[in-house]
Length: 373
Image (cartoon, rainbow, N blue to C red; front, top):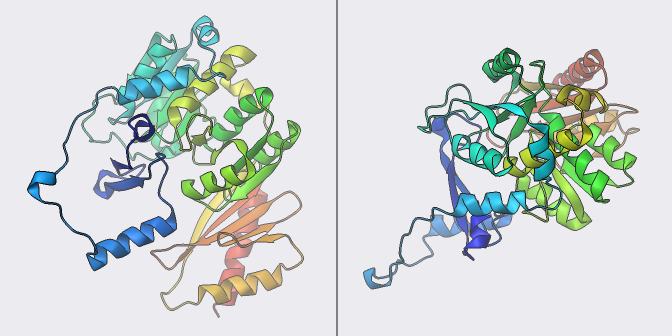
């Protein structure tokens, strides 16, 4: 959002995102503060590789300034978003625990909570030194301390963000996980109660968002995996909310980018106005389980041959090939995606039964091995 506030030509985010610190790299933004497209990225790499650029003279060098107000402007935009109800949040008198993983969340989340009128909160891992207290991806195995602290304090809610605060997940009042896949579902449910329209998530995200969208009279659309693809689809279908099942929330009339801060503000508003606990809210949504697996192959394997074999085998089922191969069953689905860097196929299967989801994944892994014989 700072790119837009400053009318900049683009932006660069220095981050490893949810990865360990050795993966620190650059996220490149266009003049709208959105991730550059694949074609723009390819053009930029070609320009760099071919050195088709000139260096300016020393007299034409630009200037460097530090902006200390970007976060404040961001938070101001969040708290003034029409669906954020500060009065309701204050009245709820929440007790919260936040895992900030020793990164920028330790700065941004407390500032947001104070602006929302939340005064009773505890920050775990609040030293902003880049030494992540645990694996930074907000997965169950990395959130045990947060779950335990919520239980210990009798807090209303636990909040976890990744190092660059674009992924968000919650812990219920009993120390159980709300479910990263359900962050978007919950926020979308609240938005759709107040603003009718369409939704978008990527093809590997839970079916629960589709169910909630249809319940509210909207239409659900799936995109290829990746924020830039979700944003593109959201624009195409005029979605009122979208994101990814990894806890990424995109509210388009605020900004076309994943933002945990608006996610926190809307989720707290929903809890406050509904009078429900986090556990009760989670129980109100359709319950699905995603089984995530991968199969390693040799480098000489023909991936297209594998996908063609599976498409033929399941030709009677609805199939989407926009991003790998997704097969729809009556109440379940499976999504196969190849890696751009490794000879790996990832298999995501979802059902309302953990056993069924695991069996679907197992069956497709067998189909893959059958295809490479």
